Each structure stands twice: as C-alpha cells, then as structure tokens.
Image (tube, rainbow, N blue to C red; front, side, top):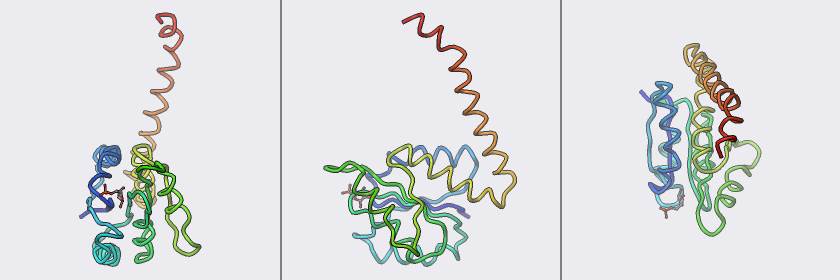
Length: 167
Ligand code: RP5
C-alpha cells in the first residue's frame, strides 16, 4: 500500500521527479505515481483526491507546469497534506507555476517547494518528514540522511585547498 502519491500533470514532468523517486527508494517508502491533469482529465483529478485518504495515502505530491492548478484542485478535494512542485515551461520558466501553486486562497493550503529537480527531491523529503512524525524508523533514517549530507560537505571542506592548488 502506498503511503505517498506523486501526481504529475503530464508525463513530460517525469524527468524533474527522478530525484523524488530515488529518495523514496533510498528510504524504503512505498509510493505510487500517476499522470492526472487538472485541465485535461479533471474528473480523474477530483476522483483521485476524494479516494486518496481511504486508500491509505498520507501525503500527495503534485507536479505541474504552466497554469498549474493541479495541486490546488487536489487539495480542494482532500484534507491530506498536499505538496506542490512547480514545473518549468516556456516562456515564463517555472514562475507562472510557482505563483499558481503558492498563491492558494486561505483555507486550502498547498506546501509549495522550489521548481524542478531540487523541488522534486525536497518534496520527497518533506513528505517523508510528515510520515516520520508517526514512524520512528523513518525519523532515524532522516537523521542519518542529514548526517550523510553534512559529512559530504565536511569532506569537501577538508580537501578544497588541495583541489584548488591543482588548478
Ligand atoms: C502542465 O502543462 C503539465 O504539468 C506540464 O508541466 C505542462 C505541459 O504539459 P505537456 O504539454 O508537456 O503535456 O499541465
């Protein structure tokens, strides 16, 4: 049973989500991925959101670009936490999608992360931190992950002068 659902507005959004799926695999979190469009398949968007909680999903991540209504529409039909990732498109890059996601009217929140692949990775970590509130094993894995990151920076710090001397 999936704890986390990742919904993308188009299959063209998939490359930006690679980091999210890598994080889920690293943490051993069950997820499901769907392609559902707020505009092209609006009935599926509403049905998915209405049924998600009963299916056992705890967090929904939505990736969409352009007039990015997907996360807001999903959030309108469920009280589960919804995380939005703005996707880049022409001509405004991800700025249009960012505003569409972050500017939700009060009462229907969407936790919006940054655009693109960094947003994909952070959406996964944010969703896992929500699950970790009631899962001690996941909470420890998050702490271990942070330590791994810190150790990598310390390692880079220890060798940076030597690297520069070789330039
Ligand atoms: C949005 O429009 C999708 O999320 C995608 O980011 C963007 C373009 O979709 P495609 O034309 O590539 O299907 O709905």
